[in-house]
Amino acid sequence: MSRLVVISNRVSAPTGEGGAGAQGGLAVALGAALREYRGLWFGWSGHRTDEFTGHIELQRAHGVTTATIDLEDQDVDEYYNGYANRTLWPLFHYRIDLAEYDRSFDSGYQRVNERFAETVTPLIDQDDLVWVHDYHLIPLGAELRARGLKNRIGFFLHIPWPPGRLLVSLPDHQKLVRSLLAYDLIGFQTREWLEAFRDYVVRELGGNLDADGTLHVGDRTVHVAAYPIGIDYDDFMEASRSPLAHQACNRLRESAADRKVIIGVDRLDYSKGLQERFTGYQRFLENNPDRHGELFMLQIAPPTREEVSTYEEIRDNLDGLSGRINGAFAEIDWVPVRYVNQGYDRASLAGFYRAAQIALITPLRDGMNLVAKEYVAAQDPDDPGVLILSRFAGAALQLKDALLVNPYSADEVSDAIKTALEMPREERIRRWRSMMESVRDEDVVKWRHDFVAALEGARIREPEPPPE
Ligand code: G6P
Image (tube, rainbow, N blue to C red):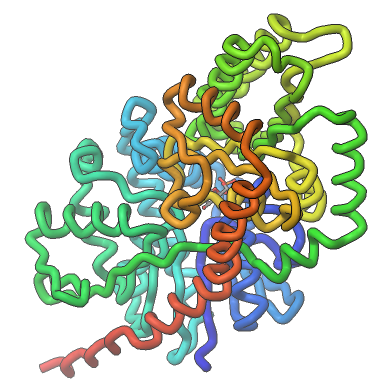
């Protein structure tokens, strides 16, 4: 078996702790993959320095070597806070109204990708499989090739791929997408994002598509496919049976005092549709005064990317909105919204999910959404809760038995809450069983095996002709 070298912006020590909600799905999924392949994980340490030195910090834990570098202030501002999170993140989540186009972001992004390539190249052996992750590192494959790497290199995008009509609003969009063609295999979360990518390549770059889905553009051949990511099922089930999970479950049940709990767990990100969710819940309270006091909403939303102003704004907006809902509807013995800004470990989240009769997961756009899958996995088979899920989350293509809603419609969200509250136990069990099958069978192990097997089978690059 070849060694696996994983490269991503963020590297977290693979302790197996931390839930998707607190940490972001990527770190959780990669930690699990690397524990199996005993490979190397390279990326940014998360620290800033005055000047870039290229010094690599090596650590070994649980069979995985992590290699991290610090980035200088300007890099973090232009690459991470800039091009990655002010330009690509909003654009790829269909929010061109929030996307900022600034040449300094562009050059910072390119510079950091070159720095990553320069630093990691000496760590890569001839037979290693190289797997690059996410929107921070789109040009990295091309930079590795420019430094002579002949290995098989794959890329997986954890977030949506936007429709071509939106993508063309990005200055130099062709340059960005062309740089992806240096990879041997490109993976997406769902068919929808895969098709959007193919359409773009065919239309804008004059690519041709084989019957088996292989793309040809000029002299490049690239395999492209959808690999829906899943949860680390065995690990999560173990966490959900732990004393910590039981304590968390009891803590929430006791404090709920027979009231039903509607839970949401998301990074505090505008793509998660939190304002729209609160508004949908508010609509439910307005439409159903007889049900006040019977339930409450628990929204756990750890802050993220706080140096980016749109993230500051969403925090302010939600503080205001939760306060207004509580101000309008609370009674002396009932608060309709519990809004918590801290993150929890995965075992506690599993306990909270089990204590909640409804999960309300309504991103406006999401590559996959692992919280939805974790909620399903945490349920009591004899008395499972109901998952209300945005039809715009990648997970909706697999969890078809959730109550699927349009997250922009407060009425639909309100109706779904009512349906969930009234759903008979047999129907809850029937829906849950079918969702659980998908969560169990299409887990993170299958995801990484499928991707790595496809990368291993991807065409080995032709040796370059000797110089004349
Ligand atoms: C999403 C992205 C990941 C990212 C995570 C957390 O899941 O796909 O690449 O790591 O969010 O965001 P952060 O900016 O804190 O790394």
